[in-house]
Length: 427
Image (cartoon, rainbow, N blue to C red; front, side, top):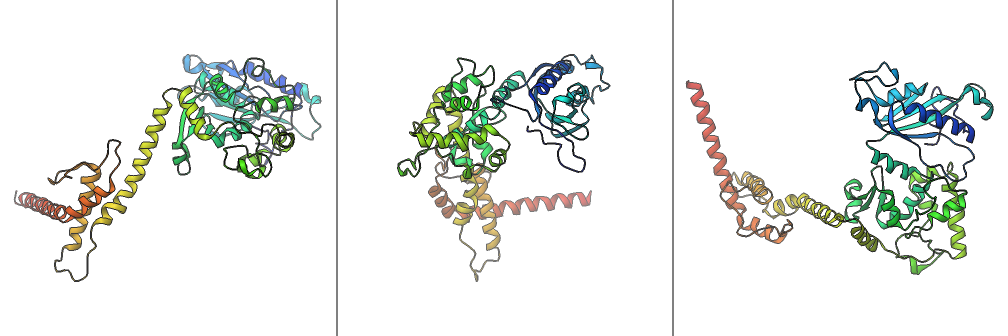
């Protein structure tokens, strides 16, 4: 999104911003053409009081070719197995250039309509319009994307508001993050809550009882006032030490993520939120009291979205168990076997310790009792966590016995292998 995908490189194209008349005409034309290929075609609600447009966002789902594969949609020459719905769409829209970096998305440059040339800004040479086309996996996925991209910067602003409370929206839906995991594995830390827009709006305290989700807001001010009704929104007062430990409330531009800072110059509503609305709220003393914490929001999520508490708990348990397993081998099992000392009489001391370590790992971490040796009592609790003190004691008390048993087993297998080789040599 933004209309600058083709403005650089060895052969750049001119994609000037579109006045409303050009935008609506091309949008309507694209929708009509794409309905020849897809059952569902839609575009997000526009941002507030837009005076011009950088590109056109199109979402499609349920390709007709997949439903009726025997028909040649819109007479294209593409046919199975080479048929690609986005390539077919690019051809149908008359794209002269395309960028395809993701399997379900394509950015197109289509010619500026000749009959609307006088509506655009003056420009030397041909002009083009950037189209961002996304193929959704289902109608439900399309519905979610319409919601996430609605009102242009709505989700960008909302996302920065709810992030301190452990909430994240991505291309799938709304998630709650597990703090113990997120610093090491962001993807694994996310627990899915919902992709239903009404459920999300209700959870965040945002109204949907009027025309908020039917048409654009009349002004940036009206738009920002609506976003501020999110129950998690608050503005941290200047130099207020009493609020330093509260979650959220810090809307400092310098603390934005890199992609958010890059978004600032070209997004009027997004820039106005940080440069105008937040300072005005702080000066007037509006929204300066936090009413939730990350912990209370998590509990609210568990209550509103049944089943997520169990998923959250199990994900965290599995993560902690895996983290323990990663340190148990070197930090506990191997570290509890006495090191080989220079001057020990037996030549196989080092080898015995190596055999003991690998065999103890199998006994303790894989429940492999093939050597006939097992712990006298369970080394894990009912959740699967190891009692590391019991593990150390078992290793210290049994490493030599385990090593000798493993040595005898290896000798037996070696003798059997030699016997088999000898039998093959005499046959």
